[in-house]
Length: 283
Picture (cartoon, helix red, strand yellow):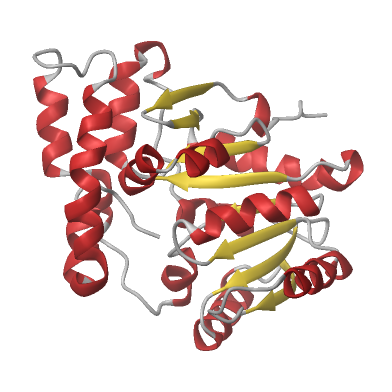
């Protein structure tokens, strides 16, 4: 029998105000599938977040959001290459393990590793059109994955009664994994709430719904690996994302500069990479 890979036992190191779980992509995927298999048995939900430079910038400005991401019952993985670069230099002993664990990659890998035994998936987010395309795509690419429910919530702020009804639907579906695609930071708050309310693994995966549904173009692999995906996203959605980069990038750089090994004069090569590939993916 394989030893259980507990996500909440993975080493955790802080960049700015965000505490990241450090693991290679394949180990993170295995750990998440394991957590989904045991969450109901032990009665513990787990909130999973995928943080990039913009996430770190938000946490710098919002103590409540920082506390949410650093909660002991949560797992925050490294979503952007610039964040991975900072982590590797700040924590050299973890450099070989500090990989980019990208939300869309994780969602695809977990679906590919699913079968009739589980996990049982619930999709929360996206427009009705996106959700329909996503369901069709999953059925074609990962026919063994069990989708037990899907809903596109309204944009209005839900009432306590609305949330209680949502929780009841998810519980009745038998879901063990809830994929939350509501945009940053809204999806992080909802994933944390769900993990507190239900014994599920709730994952805030941002643009993964759009990418897997094919409603938005994903950056070429070379841009993802070079940390230049932000440029592709900005060119695709300039009006929506321009403010995020103009506001978030300087704050991320300030947080990175406080890390060991990235103080002035200590890491010129890494600093050049950060300037050229700042923000990774936006949710």
